[in-house]
Every structure is written in C-alpha cells, then in structure tokens.
Length: 118
Image (tube, rainbow, N blue to C red; front, side):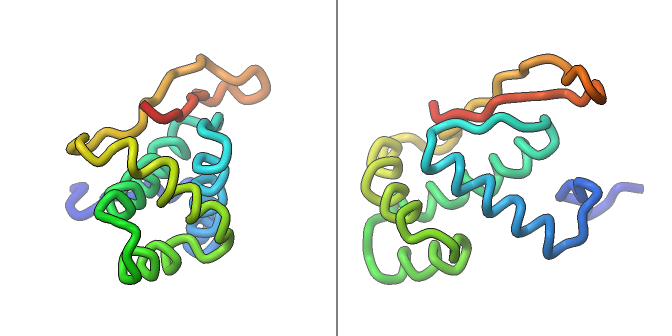
C-alpha cells in the first residue's frame, strides 16, 4: 500500500536531497527556468510554489524569516523572490509554474523537463 508517501526519494539521502532541491529552487528563482529530470522538476515545483505562496503575502518580517529558514543559502534569491516574482502572482490562487516535457535524455533515456514561471 502507498499510504502517506508524498515525496520522491530521488535515490538520494535526505540531507543531500534537501540540499539539491534548495539549490535547484535558487537556480529557478535567479534564472527564471530550470531544466532537469522530470522527477526532480516535480519536487522542485512543490518547493518553489510553497515559497511563492509564502512570499506573496507580503514583505514583512515573519514571511522573510520563514523564507530564510527554507532557503538559507542566498539572500539575493530571497530578495528577487519577494521583490520581483511574488508581486506578479498576488491575484493568482496557485499554479505559478509550468512543466514542459523535453523528451528523453540520450545517455540514460531519463525523462527530461523544463520548469518555468507562468
């Protein structure tokens, strides 16, 4: 049975998986798009959409503190999230990103996809 299984393991240890997803989220915020395997993209999408939902409430102290706890690596990414990205989605109830399938990777035939802002 698959009860209470809500995340993909991505064949990584938990600390490595969290660090990788955080770094991918920072790349997504800084560059506006991300290309990776479909499973990784789906996990990063969950992470990034929660950050945007948190940031679109406003640029107050508590929201900044909570976002800093989720993305502790780059202050520039948080600034961009709060000042550029989140204001675009204030009136949108969710679904801030889209996944575009890119086909299979030649080396190992992994499903590739691109994540970008709507």
